[in-house]
Image (spheres, rainbow, N blue to C red):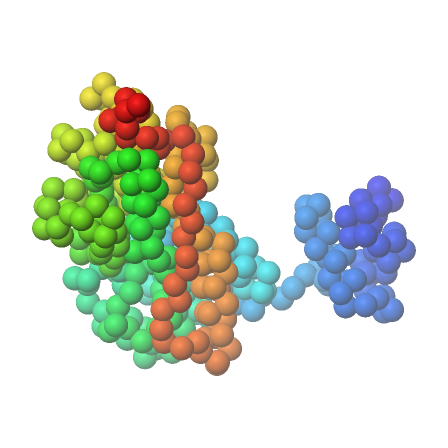
Length: 344
């Protein structure tokens, strides 16, 4: 017990006597000091005494499309931690192929009396989906926030990365390395983030290389699935069209693009440069380490929670879209275009 007191006191930067007073619920300790001691308990992995545990403010649902892509667990972790800090209990509900649909998961969460729901990359991002489901949810009085995707038909707060700016960052980087034949590998066209990435890609390629939109869309944009295999298939098609660089709409697709290059007997980045999107956990440790456009996951996750809690608290945020700037992270999967290296 003495050792534990000493550990907590050192972590919190207070005396052992102060720690003892907090743990025993005694008066005479400033609120900020009390909070520092409780935070130290959490950091060191000690359980809070029962009387000091925060009463749950309720459940909040978080619906994600899958967990195989590491960007979704990363976002879920940020959102879960932010909710816990505010006294809410996160309930993670994941769609799986052949399993529960978004509507079924929503119904399950509503039946359990959740205080609100955060949707990540849900049907709100699909331009062919019926958006009435969200209006029905609003009519039930359940607050919700939508992450990754936008629909003017849904009256709710949206949280998104700037997909157009992401493509400008990636293309500008590759053009600066001398690439003129740059391909874009991404998911099905019906999704809003996909459409926005295409817009950003076409505009930047037009501005920087003078290519016509028709040539860009017909020759340099390849749709596939948001998987390693999807990236491999898309990149294979783009490499066969003489692309010396491939921008991918996810890090998983980028890993597939690297595999596609190697299957063609090409080296990354010597023969083909590859850029990902997300900056998923562990992506810096791939071979080669992946150049990628970092999605601002911490800022987006915290904004989603803050916005939802405002909705729950009766002071809803404006029904608009909050857009967060991505950041280019240059690593080892991009280099000068092959033709550039032989010039004097």
